[in-house]
Length: 106
Length: 260
Length: 153
Image (cartoon, rainbow over all chains, first blue to last red; front, side):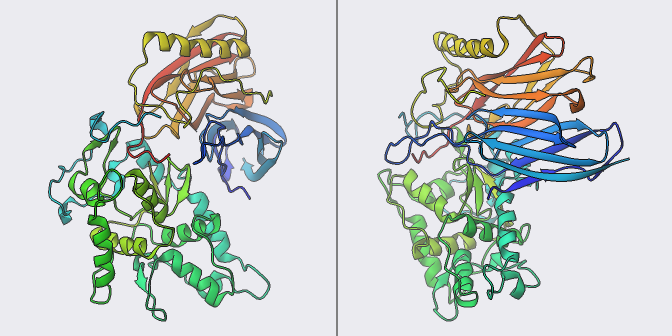
């Protein structure tokens, strides 16, 4: 089970630009490393990150192997209405992990 | 693979050097005591201090979940006995376990609890669960004093640990003492040698891209001087842990630390 | 999103990490930049790129090449008429030049993202931003990457 940590303000004023942080535990195996017997370790990385605000995408990212293990993203969005922020990660095999946080906008 | 000799390309990156002067004696004096934290760049120090971004907390979170959860139907959770939490517990280890009279560290104590009070299997070193539980328990003491006072009972183990620390080993024929007590503060390639304290473990190391135990760090150090590393949980490593806890007394527990 | 990762340059060696080099030789630097130019062309075509408006922030010395904190930001009002569509980050010395791409919307509020990247040696990380009017802007920053003292692998 991938550990996920999210930092989302609980409340915001309408129009504020708020800071969001999303961290997920993942080795982001680059595919360039070799094991102790010289064997190639296959690539295994998260390739896509998406943030939805009440189901609308507000920020997305495409990751390559150069993104460090246990990838963290700090990004921003404008607080428009109360609702739910969903954070979704997809790996190279299509497996997904996601988590949600609510926000109250006044 | 190109490996520069240890005495060779030494980049004197002044930005990485700590403020205290380097020592030339073979013992650390109490006034010289500095955590590995002091040898990090400001950005990495900030990362360790950040309770959200410090990746070590992913394992602390995991440990907390395990601590609160009952593993099976009739199995008590850790929290059901340790209702007040375990603040102050980590700094008591390694300690002599009363029934077996053996020296055990925090990992050993957690496993003993599991087998004796929860009827669960012991967890393997470097398993996500044992790392999580160790990180969680040690984190409960973050900011508290690190260190164990020598006692008559502990003396033979402290001596065993000290002997390991002072013995040269490996193809490079180096002892822990030579780097960490005699040449700390000097440059080793792009790194500044730290004093080799254990107060931040289990720690997130960039080299591992993961949280890892102190024994994993010992094994890396041994491999670094091209010596045969001891197995995880080896009693000599536990004795070394104890010796380090007497040597580093006065520092603070920083778990989960962030290190190179 | 293509899953084929074609190497833009031969790795220095098997382990992901480089020997300490404060600067590459002129020939090497040319070869490195060729990989970045190719990657940029794949994403943005041959459109002209102007330097400016894009800031790449990295520590002057990276503790360890496995995890270097990076912030990329672009000056932009981020309105529906004038916003940053995407930012692509490139590394000349990594085996793959393309580090990541970030896509923004007018709802982003601020064209800024911070993350941690892997860097194979001392180099200048470059970022190219595409604005909503199609114009391209770039910025870069160099950082020194040190290698661990005791190499285990």
